[in-house]
Image (cartoon, rainbow, N blue to C red; front, side, top):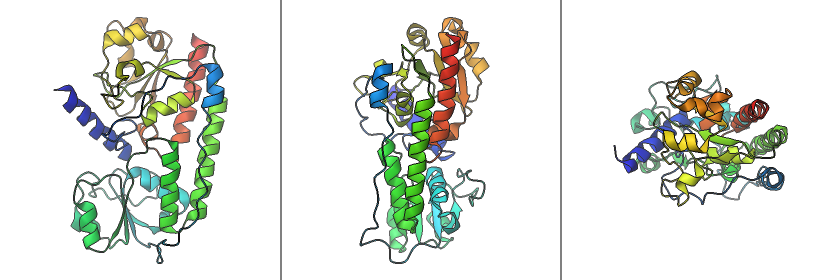
Length: 328
């Protein structure tokens, strides 16, 4: 398979993981297939204290043109949006959620409601007055508009500012402005606590985030990569996509990974293999992460959705970083 096609497939799979998650853009943070932000170097321990503070959510005021009649029947075709809606207190307004919306438990998940091959008639059958989608396959938003149904499109967030903005927008749209503000404040506080709990080190821990067994990875220009950077870690994939031509998702090689010697390897529970399988790869026994038992398998949902559970992911990685430092 050609590299370009392979990247496109990975981006699609990232969207699915973000829905299950993931953005859009992404098995991890599901990024959009647009030009990625410039890759930045992970900060040193000293720099981290100055540069890794969590972005602050802006205060949001209800605009004059806010919906006069608040939605009473919301259909969510984004697993991340579903989590956001319930977090801000709009859960009772959600009448249906797509098949990947598996959290929280009370979400009205519909096994036959697809976020990636949406059926206009199936969506309209729920008589929604608001539909939230993570991407538009081409004619869904127009079709909903023709039926008089309001649509909000929220693609995968590129950074924390966009996370806060999306939550605030949902708060305005649903009349849950206070709940959105409280959710953003809670996320910010949780991120700051996770950063503070990450143990300092003279040399940043080298991290490799593996998307699949062909060694596609995510650089610091992606949302998931930024989460590692917040914890003061060095991403070994960054040097493989300095020009951004791989949209932050370069395909590495076994030889490259052995040479760069990551001290932590992160995979998700959706890749179809385990940490033990990674450790058993030929020649990988000399990689520090393998030799010291620091191959970490995490929940794919918290690793790929850019909603309120970002904090859970940072807590898991912060704890794994502490273990990696002890084992060096």
